[in-house]
Length: 255
Image (tube, rainbow, N blue to C red; front, top):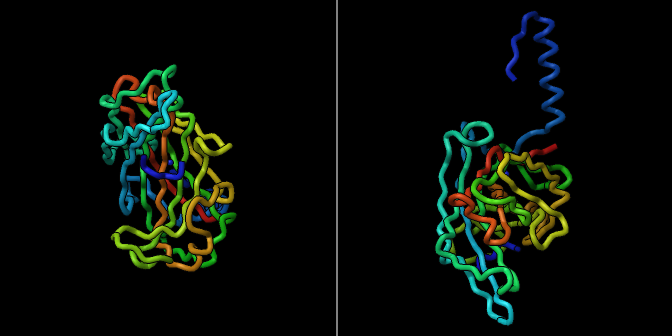
């Protein structure tokens, strides 16, 4: 099982109208804050992106866990159209080869499909980072599946390989801190369905799963990866085709 620690144009007719419009824009920008990460798959591209698929079950009376990971086929692609506003990132899951016992013969079963989007920091220094100063915003929906009731998302604060707190032998980015929101192990619930939702969460409402806030402040954070995960019972996937998860307009906002 993959360990993942169980988303105004205006026409100014007069100088006075133009002036008022400028003041309005400034007020809106001040209210919304400044994006320190922004990926929209149109003019703002990700550093990289990836897909994740996992699942498993346990039969009644058995102590063994049966993984479905090797039987799930995942794909991903960039959409030029199909997001909430133009382009987006789409991941898909084919679970046609994954045989799962019926409900009455299993203790539990689950399946998950995830979309990971890495965004580079935009002219920002997180040496004085505080969770209460930031919020994350993204749009997400699923296709060919029932509403995913145990969905969640994660934020991974990363730096380049070898520049993190501990050494390792791989060439992957080093994780400084992982923040989680919702999911099957959390009292907070997040459901994804077949209509785009704009999900907006204060970082102060997320939990630290790995690393620490101090490591974000101490080390040179180079990017922040959003991982959106649609999770539920296996029979809620592949309703009329491969289940798809589409994520668009990922932003980390400094208030």
